[in-house]
Length: 155
Image 1 (tube, rainbow, N blue to C red):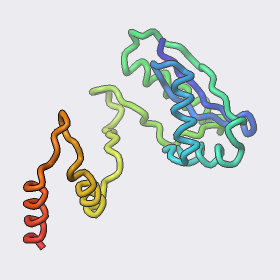
Image 2 (cartoon, rainbow, N blue to C red; image 1 turned 90 degrees about the vertical axis):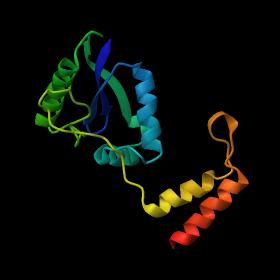
Image 3 (tube, rainbow, N blue to C red; image 1 turned 90 degrees about the horizontal axis):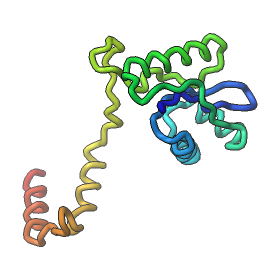
């Protein structure tokens, strides 16, 4: 079953609304992990978590859909709950584009993540030199030397 859920704050009555096909307990663990590590995308939810603590939050199922439900049906159900909580002023979600239906007219949304700076990319690249790659292969010392020489020439 597909579940539309709310991660609710028992103190201020607000909630984060989401949709999952997975086990609800697993989804709660994912949210908890993000929130504990200060990495949740929803700033309002993160601030409330920091203020009230983990014990003030609970997960509840708002609606269940069949596994055969289309992406459009899932999205419409989620939007319905967004509107209900938003009209009451109880919604933490600022980003209401968690997923989109293909050719559904919900807009162009892509979650590409943050861009890495050239310095970060270079640091990550250098950290990987000499470490096993596919099937345990390593970058050879010769290849390492050639990369460093090439880099020095480009300067």
